Amino acid sequence: MEKSGEYIKLEEAYRELKFQLEEANDIINAIRSGEVDALVVNGKDGHQLFTLKSADQSYRIFIEQMTESALTLDKDNNISYCNSQFAGLCKIPLEKVIGSGFLNFVDSEYQNFAKEIIDGAWEVETKAELCIQNALGERIAVQLSLKVLNLDEGLALSIIVTDLSGIKKTEKLLQIKNAELEEARMVADELNQNLEKIVHSRTLELEVKNTELIIALNNLKESEDNLHSAFNAGELGSCSLDLQTGRAEMSEKFRELYGLPVSGEINWDMVLSAVEPEYIPELNIVLEKCITKGKPVDSTYPIRHLITGERRWMRVVGKCKTDENNKAISVYAVLMDVTDQKQDEQRKNDFIAMVSHELKTPLTSMKGYIQVLQLKARQENLAFSNKALEGAERQIGKMTNMINGFLNVSRLESGKISMDFKNIELTELVKEVIEEYATTITSHHFQHQFTDKLFIKADWDKLGQVINNLISNAIKYSPISSQIFINCFRDGDAAVFKITDQGMGISSGNLPRLFERFYRVENASTATVAGFGIGLYLSAEIIKRHGGKIWAESELGKSATFYFSIPLAG
Image (cartoon, rainbow, N blue to C red; front, side, top):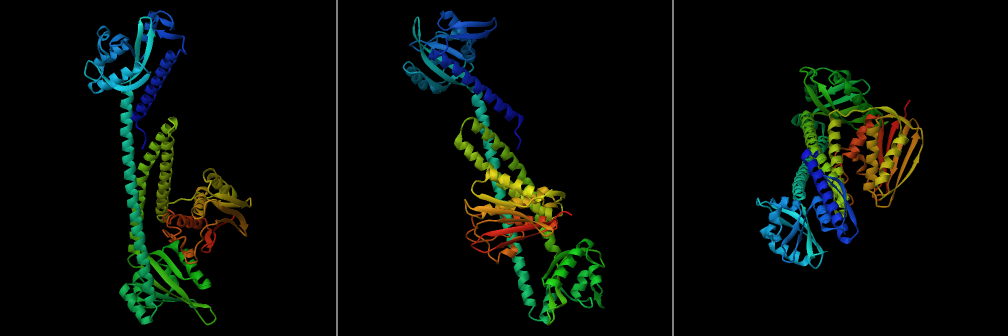
């Protein structure tokens, strides 16, 4: 939220009034303490020199030149002398002020207080704030500076009256602005809590759906007859691909989902004709890994129905069958229409993106107000307030990073995240990120070893985000004062980044899922560590778009090591 023009003017007026008050007090104190022997006053007749030890007339001329109100009281609290500024403040002619009792000008609520202050001032120099009332009935906040003067005609009580109405008005307006800022912060907190609940709810729904899918697949393995019955009930298609002949056998549901002929032989090329062209290479890679490495088939891709032309999303899950020599002979897979789930996921991403955008505006305003308050706190040496505001600014930074994470996930999955590939040197990028941490992090110690001239084709900012996330995780999940080791080296035709912490480690059961969206390792050690499980997911997707790979090695109770590799520039 940007500061308004009115707010800026109020701050400037407040600072000017405060400066004038301090300047006047300094002059008064200097006069009273004898530090000043003479004064130069710029009047309408030019500069004049007045000595405080000279005639009473010179003293009176000086008093008239003051911007503050000044007066003297006798022992009966009657005004024996005052300057025109005090008469103007009270909106009463000067001749009617002199000789009047000073308490006549004090607001009724402050009568007793004023009398106590005046009585005490005959003994000890003092200052006080109260309200006077002018001839129009207006209450005016003032500061009184009282001191006994030893004049030729005897003792008199000198009172310097400083008008505080402008300062009080500015303070009140600043209090209103601060209250508005606090209200905005509370609204942002509430929105953040609602967002966390929504994300948690959606995550639980996704886990339930995944669990249901696994249970269904296990039940389908009982027998081929039960398998087909379950497929028909669940509107699932099945297929098998003979790797030697290229012949494909499809269930009726599979043919229906693709728009293939209801009878007759089907080959793999006919199946691929329905898949959108940009997804064919990915599907072939998944199939190749299944055949050559025995990895399960699990791929989601869009098709165009061969009859209606309707665009639908399909997910195929399967595995490779081998002969007695462990040679792949066929691939068996199950097909399901996941269009509705994809649309639900897209709506969820759109919602997260919308909420994240809406949250950024109040957070930006909050940060601006806090920076203004920090400046004021530093100027006034308010150590506690400054420390509290620094803590608030750190929390806003965390919220901003979290919101940016959600926005990046949304952009990534909608294909709107762009990459600016340039030839860069990996070691320089890593050094830059480490230097940023070294200036702000004192709880951990960094040890690094680099191989220079590791030139790669990469997006400097996106890859820096990956390195930043891996270093941040190492700090969060390792003890204070522990060391973090960072290496960059060449491995064949690839540049490799490696980071090792001395933290709690990761169990073998959690390692395969570390880079899934919204996945977090849940145990007693990680319960107090904040996060939503999107950092590693984003990192994996960014490395994937660089043509590289990312992985982790660890054992529970021991250190964890994360790697990523990117092909060297040709």
